[in-house]
Image (cartoon, rainbow over all chains, first blue to last red; front, side, top):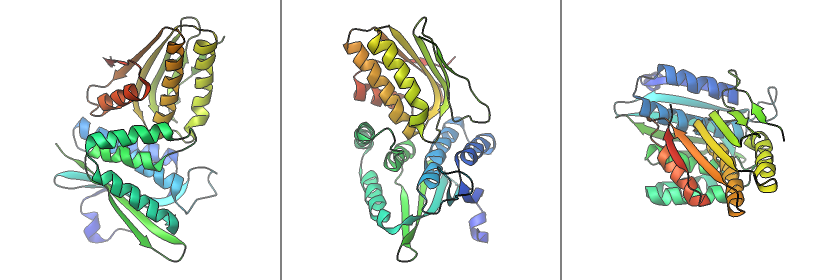
Length: 172
Length: 128
């Protein structure tokens, strides 16, 4: 649930099972309703799908009553700020995955654009066909936005952490 | 060899429309691609292309009219391009056209990355 001060800039907020049909519906709703130029909307659309699919694939909480694949539980929100849009997602992860995610995001945030593209090419060419690829999705998010990815990992108990990520798309 | 056709489904816009024509070798992917378990969708396409180009040595023109594809789909698109690269190295005529939307800010880098990874020449054309 959002607090009052979190509602001020909020366009979309959802918390629950996230599957491909919800992602598709929400991303197309955004295209129709967000007030921005087409380049900005294109970037929001791409970033949202990558981040939301990571929730559906990798959340440690899976909604088993819907389908066997890709229905992780988590949340996403899109906020409209003065000079940028913020796309955020959150979900529970196994604690041991937190270190890898933190290391990956630090690497992405440390690289220049050309270096990031090289990392994307190397990561993609080494991935298997069935690798649904959270790492390459984060690399692509960094490339699309040109911003650092903001990541937070808060331990919840001995087994799980809460993983949140925010990507920003500049207005033009 | 039969044509490979997958029609667009409005309720599932995350699957692209496919038309691989065995009579003239013109193969088209259009729409968007961000389905779950992309390898299941792309495996028949890869098998069709391998048989058509690598085994039967038929020339092929690939027309990519994808307005969006996620990173998982890009991994499978790379596999398609790798098949065409092997066919080209084996002497088959291969042409690849990438149709893009003028207001897509990222497509030129995407195509350039595919060219670097595969060594193929990809011709960029504005979407009509």
